[in-house]
Amino acid sequence: MAESIRRQLALVLMASLLALAAPFSVADTKEAIEAGASQALARLRAHSPAAGELVDQAYAVLVFPDVVKMGFGVGGEYGEGALQIGGVTQAYYVIAGVSFGLEAGAEYKSEVILFMTEEALRDFRNSSGWQVGVDGAVVLAKEGAEGAIDTLNSREPVLGFIFSNRGLIFNLSLDGAKITRIAR
Image (cartoon, rainbow, N blue to C red):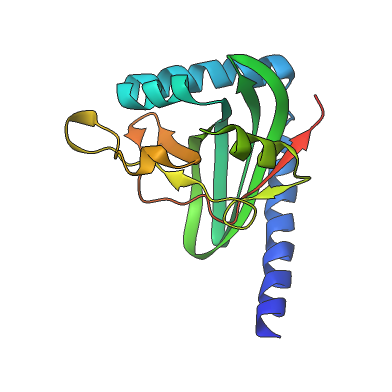
């Protein structure tokens, strides 16, 4: 029962935050999403050449170039992105999530999800709304000594990278975020 009330409160607070942000946000066009995705992938490659190699090996790359996370006690995140196969955009998606804890303020980041196997990509594309940690796990790749990516993580079917202009971020999680296809 307490969990239900907590979720309802979170939804009300999230709706309030989104309502406050609505006047300042406009849905991105296809062109804006694709340009942002190209810039985000270039930044990821600049931060970590090893990550760039994994991007090249992936069956598909889902890029959310501008994910905003805001909150005050209860937080939320939102971003629009593109699914690319062979460097060509195949579909557009939105990522959204709610989080609890001592949060205040806003931050912007980029998120890249790599589908390393055909099966992982097929499972993702066949879902009507893919929730990280429920419908599939995204293992955040970790950078080791001299910029190498942890080889154990690089064998996972779905890998993720979270980064800002300052570099890769390792202390965050994508768990609980829901990814849904959108029309553009």
